[in-house]
Image (cartoon, rainbow, N blue to C red; front, top):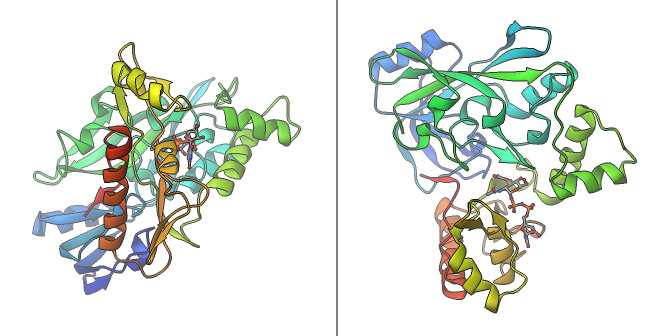
Length: 335
Ligand code: EPU
């Protein structure tokens, strides 16, 4: 086990924040991971670093899960069960699925991060969430080192939610995920407005899964900053879910407010719209700012500290609450 001390995490978080781990190790096998856990339970687990804001140094052993490998574990005439280890890059895995003509994940192209962290927040985009294709995931209990397989139902998925963020927070490390994917008769979901428009622009009337993936890549590239060029963590906030009555009161004052029905009693309002209306889109505060093409994304112009970005996010939350009476919650983990 190779442990490094006072290790910079700048290249290990997509916000590109300079913060230090007291100690750092990368594990490339389940056995190595168990060896680490036998010696130390009070650890900080790091996947792709794409959904966190480091506001301080980490005074713990940071364990970077770098388990690699993709394999087909079962198949029948119609479906394939593909397993990816936790340290695989998510987008590379999606591209592997598309190359093999395995359908289900194409709408989730180009999402930053690693496979092992995707179930934790049930990543989603353009009308699909990981829960729609996830068959199961394997994890190790930090306390007992036991392996446990979680079925889709046992993950208790919700909008950017799972059991791993709630009841079982910090108790398991996900080591691999199995997806159930289609081999033919792919069920395409292009209903999300922007995808249909992008396909039309590409002159495609009978899209393949590759076409849908290409359309999503084009949309994301035009709206969302590439973390390699401009540090960011995707959507910083969740879209708030509010009571229907509250929405009905709000539209009297803000008739253009978009909304999506969640249930008979609740609607979801796009936080990006609220932030743009409040005048934050494209604004810069020191080294931190709000992206010019998507107000949900906070960016690091190079030398921002986590604290600076946190302050911008708190300023946005406060203003939105004052103007709209709506509380918006961070989607990223604030460390
Ligand atoms: N909007 C604005 N201004 C903005 C951004 C959005 O007015 O600056 C409005 C749009 O006009 C539209 C609505 O908000 O009416 C929704 O916008 P968009 O389709 O861009 O999606 P979003 O709700 O802002 C969510 C996800 C994204 C995902 C997209 C596409 C959350 C928190 N975010 O954003 O996920 O890519 O939908 O499906 O649910 C992520 O989680 O990191 C992420 C990027």
